[in-house]
Each structure stands twice: as structure tokens, then as C-alpha cells.
Amino acid sequence: MKITKDQIDSLNAGRMKRHSVQYSYCKEQCEAAGIDMDWVTNQVAAFEVAIPSWALGAGGTRFGRFQYGGEPGNLYQKIEDIGVLHALSGSAGEVSLHIPWDIPEDTDRILRHADQCGIGFNAMNSNTFQDQPGQSLSYKYGSLCHVDAGVRRLAVQHNKEVIDYGVQLGSKSLTVWLADGSNFPGQLNFRRALQNTLQSLREIYDHLPADWSMFIEYKPYEPNFYSMVIPDWGTSHFLANRLGEQAFSLVDLGHHLPNTNIEQIVATLMMTGKLGGFHFNDSKYGDDDLTVGSIKPYQLFLIFNELVYGFNHNESNNPVPAWMIDASHNVKDPLEDLLQSLHAIETAYAKALLVDQVALEDAQSKNDVVAAERVLHEAFQQDVRPILAEARKRRGAAMAPVEAFRTLDVRNQLIRERGSQQTATGL
Ligand code: RM4
Ligand code: MN
Ligand code: MN
Image 1 (cartoon, rainbow, N blue to C red):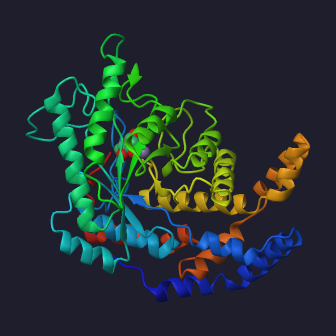
Image 2: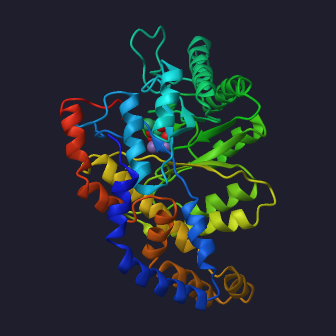
Image 3: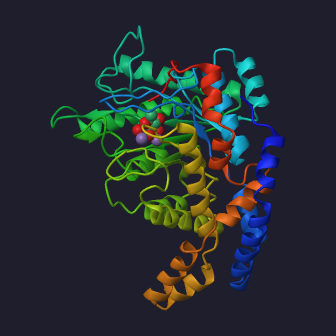
């Protein structure tokens, strides 16, 4: 299914009167505080986040999976769904593929189709956490870290193939997330596992085209519960440093122990120029993969505050990170959930752009703790919904995407087109 410009325009037309009043009020308030609202709105309008190909269907837990109707049954339909998200939000113009969940068999056809839907290809993701049918050796005891060189070779080879697919699609990066680790003390030699991982990553790194990046994700636990080979940002940073200039750390918000100060990690990685990618989601306890901003919106704002500071003080030439939503949808319509996530990301970004950096620095230099905190609260408490609506209007998208999704009855149309039995590949 495709959403037309006329549909968007007529939905927006109905909101214009109220929007003009709200945006002018917001503009007045912000400009009184010395903020250039046009600039802020345009920054928000330019922000795009990739959608993972594995998050368009129902997410399951190990206890069960509940089907949605109209789930995309193949990569073409997944790209169509992202086209719908992009038409509605104006900020979801790229897909991030997970191989082998989504093998682009006929690359020319995929490229043509993606082009028609207005979708490009973001980071490629490899998968060495599941054995594939007919696989000669097993990843049961790890992949890039494995004690058996044959398994390591298989996993390295898989990553090289993922790069090759990505090259054909115009992607520019590979994200490596490893489930490798151990469940019991004594199971794994920590040092050897890390050395093997570094060596394997080096072989993959050597296969990267010159204009590509490699992102190394970390995660403290799950699916292994005693140790993970890359449990934290320090280990990921160490590996990225050893590999070279094209390797970076990737922060997945759900991959931290409860109460970790993620904004501080972001600040440190940007300072060293090694923040390469970002996976957005939210969590209460672990890698819950919930809607972005649903649990800890203030933390998300503080993270964006560090990102904005990092963009403005970029002595180590940190590249613009590859932004992606990495979520799973157990009880919500995946497309609505993704629209909510995009909204939450843009909200946090817009608020971070409103932070009075000069006043903050001034308060910090005087150790005026209250003043510093008030600067942050001032921005966090500002209602930025009119800015987001204006940004969407400027990029030709729906000013209220979730409402548009419902008014246009997208889910039922997808069910009519695809039926209720298809299951999307992915988590
Ligand atoms: C992992 C990690 C990876 C994602 C897989 C499916 O926990 O977040 O980024 O590719 O899940
Ligand atoms: Mn992730
Ligand atoms: Mn995860």
C-alpha cells in the first residue's frame, strides 16, 4: 500500500488553523529566550532514523507470540511498510537489514522497489547467534570467540557475505552484535575468548570497503547470563580502537544494567570520536525493546543533550552516528509503535536543541547546581509538539502521524491486501 501526497495534504489541512496558533505561541516563547526557532525546526526536520527490517511484525517472547494481521511476508512488503512510515513521519527513510532474516536475493529488483518507496539502506546486521538450517558447524558455544577455529571461520565468512550484500545495496556500514559468552563459571577462558573475537573482527574489518564503518554493539547479559564477551562500552571501545579508524562502538539503549548513566557513556564515546551508531528503545529492566521514551523520557532527553553538545564540540571528528530504532512489538501495532518511537526521538532531540548551552556552562563554572539543573528543566518542560508538527509539515509528512495512520485505516488495508496469516521474519 502507498500513501499519497493528497491524502497527507488533506489530513494536514484540517489541522492548520490550530497548528498556526500553537506554533506561533511556541515560537514566541522560545525566541524570547534567544532561540532561533526556524533553525531548531529545520534541525528536527532533517533528523532521520532507520527502521530495522525485523521489527515490522509481532515480536515474540520465549513464552509466546501473538500475530498481527497484515504482517509483511517478505522483504518487499517490509520495505513498503517502511515507505508508509516514511510517508507519515518524513523521518524513516532507511531500512536496516538483518541477514539471513532478510536476504536481498534479487538486488536489482529490491533496489528498484526501495527507490519507488523512497527508502535507502542503512547499516547491515549480521547474525551469528542462531544456527541456520543445514549449517555445518554450530554457534551454540559462540561464534567469533569460539574455541574451534572452524566455527570462527564460518562466522567471519558470514559477516563478509553480509558486507557484500550491503555493498550491492549501497549500505555503508556493518553492525556486529555477538551473543557470545558463557552461562557458567569456568565455561570460557575470558582472555582467549576476547583475543579470538578481536582476531575474527580483524578479518571482517579487513574486508570492509574503504568508505564503510563497522559498529560494535555491547550487551551485559542475554542470551548468556554469566558472561558476555563484549559486555560493556569499554570492551567495545577497546575493540574499535584496536581495529582502526573505521571501527566504532554502538550504543543500544537497552544494553545496560539498570540505572547505568548512559548519557555519560555517550559523552565519553563522542569525546574519543568512537560513537558510530545508536539503537533506540526503552526498558524497565533489561533489553526490553519497548517503545522509545515510554519509560524514561528524561534520560532520553539527557542523552540527546550530550549528543547535541558532542555535535557542537566535535574536536575528534565523531561521525554523525547511524540512528536506528531497535524495538520489538508484543502488544502494540508495530507500525504505530514505530511512529510513537520516532515521535519520542524527535521530542528529545528538539528539547535538547532548546537547552541554553551558555547559561549551562555559566552555571557549571560557578558550581551553581540549582541553576544548571534549572537550565535543563527549562528545556525539558517545554512543549515541543508544535515544533515537531511544523517539522513534519516542512518535509511533506503528516503533522500527526499516529492519527493519520488511524484515519487512513492502514492496518485494515494491510490485512485486506495480505491476509492475517503471514508472519514477518525477525525476532
Ligand atoms: C540484540 C541486539 C541487536 C539485534 C538483535 C536482534 O539484542 O540489540 O542489535 O540485532 O538483538
Ligand atoms: Mn541492538
Ligand atoms: Mn538488543
